Amino acid sequence: MAKVLESPAMKLLEKWGIPVPAHVVVSSALQLKTLAQVNRWLSESKLVVKAHEAIGGRFKLGLVQMNLDLASALRAVEELLSRTVQGLQISQVIVAEQLEHDEEYYVCISSTRDGADILLSKHGGVDIEAHWDTVQRLSVLIEDMPSRLSLFALSRQACFSDELAERIAKILERLFLCYENEDVLSIEINPLVIRKKDMRLSALDAVMMVDMNAKFRHSDWNFALVSDFGRSYTPDELAIMEIDARIKGSVKFVQVEGGDVALLPAGGGASLFYADAVTALGGKLANYAEYSSDPPDWAVEALTEKVCALPNIKHLIIGGAIANFTDVKATFNGIINGLRKAKAQGRLNGVKIWVRRGGPNEEQGLDAMRALQHEGFDIHVFDRYTPLTDIVQKALTSF
Image: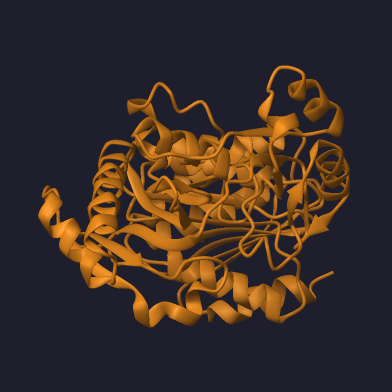
């Protein structure tokens, strides 16, 4: 799952027949000035300038400026690009045509266990949460398509007039086609606006989540996918995601800047436990990672190489609780191969390695880990009888 930033999300909406404002994405005021020479609307329209980053609540954070002419927009671009918000340096700005409108609505399609929910409210905009009781819902089962009649009924439920309900139903129909055909997990349009003099509907803003494993099906997905952390995925993260998409089992990897404690846990529970324990004891995480559901040893080896390549790490915590079916020996073989490759590349110098694990073939796996001491690794190995908390405590209090 990955976020799609506003501009590529708007282009996907436009592809499926949903009107959106004219817009450009720039990384400097000079770039906007150059684009204005060939895009007349930038000089002739009122403009909106917004930070083009995966940050929620941009308006409330002061990352949206409205009612601008081109000169004001140029200044707004410079000002926004100088800002750091929630630890993220603003690197791109979207400049859009400010559309005249009379009302703002809320539309969302979100995947569920059984299919999808279509949400609609006559009250959209920055304070949609205050009007959540007005949101109407239509549930659609997997492989079903909502009928125009059901979408019209949803619109009437949301208190739209007959004429407007017809138009809203058409927009919802197109939006569902986008959802189905673009491997979307959720789309939120807030606001969907209307100019009543010509009944023009337009999506002013969009938040979209897509299934990144489906990228191979979409030759026109030429945009960068964005993580939940509000930044583009790193090359190492993308490499592990690609492996994860094609194996039995799972491998996950997220880099965290500035940390010195690296994690290579077995299973989602252990990964969260270790992350919480390291943080609670005053340590600084260098990453999030996990391997689970008995992945092949080569995939675990690849994950180990990425973890060992993290800069400035002092400790590496490996393993987790007692596995039910993951083969400890096999997955440890992958980790050991990865550790050896890292050492051969000059990594892991001065890094203490802490191992705790139980499960099928644990004795053979733990013995193989202990044998690394003879190869010059500073490694400390514990079995199922050592509490997980002790491993973190030993790591962060060792010298």
